[in-house]
Image (cartoon, rainbow, N blue to C red; front, side):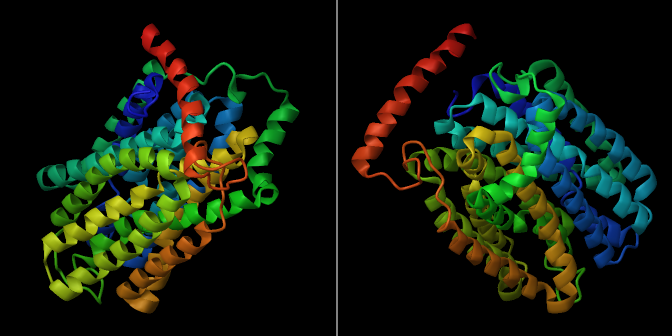
Length: 445
């Protein structure tokens, strides 16, 4: 491990960052581009994002068991090729008509979960469970480098120079580079993993179905799905809402900021997440996943969400205070890093199915985040949407009290928190064997 990152997956993290940079190019400006330059109504632009999120949810749900059944690297490569093809269809055919935009951009939602969440399976199959949150911290750091930081900063430079459409054409180049890195430099799953075992067609079918049935079989996983959906609603809702809200495109907002200021703010928000993802992963492994998510995640997100809504109303075009809200947003949203470790911990004998449940929730939040804006903004206004998000964060706080995942070194097998003495003894037991395991790859490398 390198500060919690599995050595043999270093190029996987790099591939993810570059891939997600290409995937994220349109995130901070597409809604405004469709409204201002293509003549869409705000609700039509919202529908494009909402349908996209629904397709992402369906694709993400199946990815975990598909990756564990057919191999995560194979699925990552398929996702990369599909993304490039479907994105080109969107910007050549779909972008000028609302109906075609919904159809073609929605279809593109099939692709990135295949790449991104297959890598989650590869991490889970290659990492000691006691260090899985740290490994997932690096996963979300790479995600933030790509989708948020590079995906926002590069368009902030290219849009003034060459325009939005040319920037959209640049995205497949990044996706192609990430896919090639995966092809040549990312290893396959370990030999003892489920994806490397020979299974009959009936066994493969049973494993695929378990991605659905596990929600009924394990109520704790169903609860974990709820908090996984809630924790990232604003992460996907704000890129639709804020370019319109902060620049005065909504009837109940004003032109407090311009598009470039918003894009650069989101780039900084994502850049902060690079560090906090890594820190929260290591803190969660040491002090407890659920406690961290409850207080620093959900409560922090409720405050940050209200900050995004009310800073412009109360203080006008005060970019410094909006950055404060943005940094709090970064610190809070990354406190949910342990989500990727909780699902496998709740069903260690069916990691692929558990990760499929995690991916379903991740996809649903991609759908519901923009859907809340699309449905409620015309009904209750922009600040009403802000309050809806904030209240849902508090609901998430309450649900965390019902989930008790077993966490090595922090709880026993039933999820009961260990005493300090028990935790010290458990850490010593965990550290000794895992340290010896880490020495072997280092000597080979």
